Length: 258
Image (cartoon, rainbow, N blue to C red):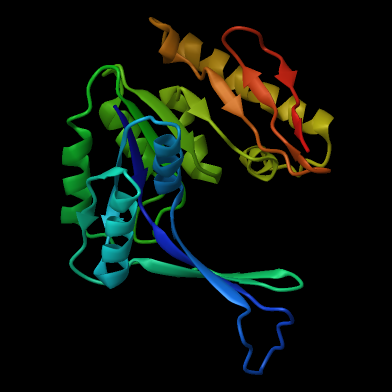
């Protein structure tokens, strides 16, 4: 079974305005509502592909009720933890000549609710896959992904990590099955700004070096014990998806989507 975790889900409220005038009353041409959060998005896409998953995470208030019922209505199995206080955040996306985003903060996650998530994760077994994806509320420590991976390490569970900066960096020692930084996030991991394909390719290969170092620290006993795949979303001159397979062939392939 695939399990996804969304620590800070959101209702995305998308408003389209022909011309946004600051300080005035603006009328929306149309509006859309989406149930968001990266982990939830993964479960929704898996559902479209006919693959079962369980969506875990935290919801609160009337907005949390809407997300829980909406995701379940889309055919995704949910096992959210309900927080006693606050409301799941609303992210406002204003689309006009350019796009302006105002993202909500989200509710506080108390220690008891976090432990309830740990209890659910403790039921995962050999052959399961855990997807940790997206941002975390400010009330959680920035090593939360690391704590989860350390707790489940050695159980034969495949880890997928889609995160940024320290959240991603601290997870690498647990040899996730797949990671997916974009070009900006890849640069942030190494403290550089990447502006070319060659630069991106170079630093993508540095992740391979991290894997090799990890392998020396802890011998590989099975295929899933190393970072098998790195997908990097490139936003230079269009949409590109480089694919790096560090297990079979350590090379970089760029695929342009028109």
